[in-house]
Image (cartoon, rainbow, N blue to C red):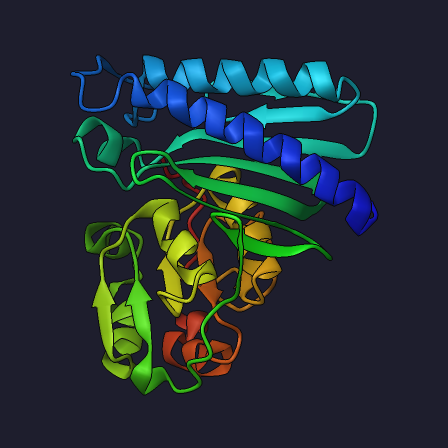
Length: 268
């Protein structure tokens, strides 16, 4: 796809994601009824309603495109384009009344992420971008930070319990020891912070493709790196490591990924 085509599709994706975000706000801090899925992760009517809205809009606008959503699965398309959706990333934040949840919409073209939107409706912030187009924060161009030394870096992860349960806490502790500070800014909100220069490194030990797709597109459009804990660029790994690019070699040296096992489990 050309940058011109992606720019037009990005406008559609931005509008659709914002509409889905407005739907979720009608449930937010309004005692949403929580159910547990088979994997014990929480889900609400807001998750399902937002995904239905996005699916309907995408199928109407791009009937030949495929679609993969966390709540309702996959529909194959006739073109090599697939939308990958997480209607509410950070459902635990959402049901806890914490405004750090996001709506994630990404477009994959021939197996690579080319476009993404990360919308934080309760904060009124949105970060989005596309290959060859660049990244934007509430309409303004944005870039990752220029921090060039790990000793000055701000590190984020969602949960130390998740790191421990997936055998990654020692690696994280080594990385944390080299950084200026760490904060638990959760889920895709951390990637939003990275793409806007407010965080320098994000590590997550367990991810699903709907967690990684949109952040991968946004972070790379903003000049950063996104991949697995070995530094391989991908949105398909069951984990995530994102950096501002300049810090990647130091981060990989700290993580020393070779002595940690992969996990095939899926996150929220």
